[in-house]
Length: 269
Image (cartoon, rainbow, N blue to C red; front, side):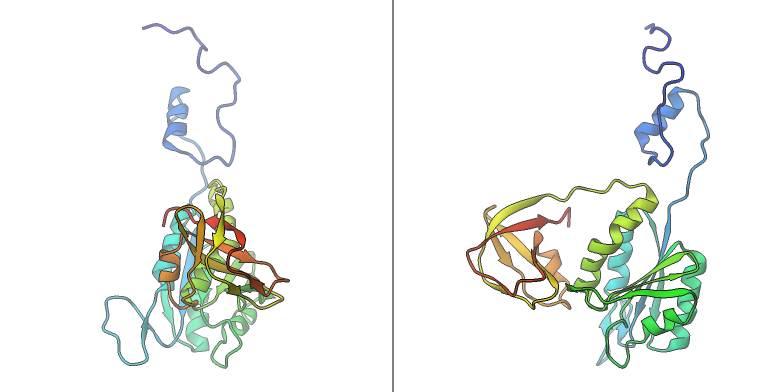
């Protein structure tokens, strides 16, 4: 078989742009023009710390007052799905020295630091203060007008962002989805997926608090009904069994049963 010179790629034609993700197809394009080596950015590294004296790693037997660390494995998977490399640093007990030690390690080893737990208003929730004392500018946001996710904080230490996520698994994963995921995708060169949505009729009324946006997981039935999954922020199965979520606006306190709502669908679960 004989092809004319330039029938596929002409002289001076641009075949790839800076910042594009090198897929297997684009590697083939590089090979087609005889390029064996290119300069690339490595995957961004995201350090993950779970905070809480009650946490233990999965695989261990639980003692009274202990729970398994859900956020560590779940956030690691979420980071991977955004095209970055998770660096799970383990569990930090509710001691300032331990949290600070792991946070410093995370900042040395990674481009972004995620800390779950220890960010709400309780006496044991000391993470924002610890992070704020570690450098400038420190904490720049503490608190979101969103449920789940109210105690979330954002800090900058040097030039590296720190995201403080709630300890409850549903809250941590929803805040990651809403606030962190697209930022990590931007660093990794991943495309920002367009979330599909459908309109469905709500099967039960949903109560909310005026002044904050609420995200409510729902199951979609028969493609036309949206059933709220109201298990609370500590029940991770409220996400694993949901097909998507609805938003209750800041100014609303109630969505009535039977109302038509927009369901924003999750991707593959």
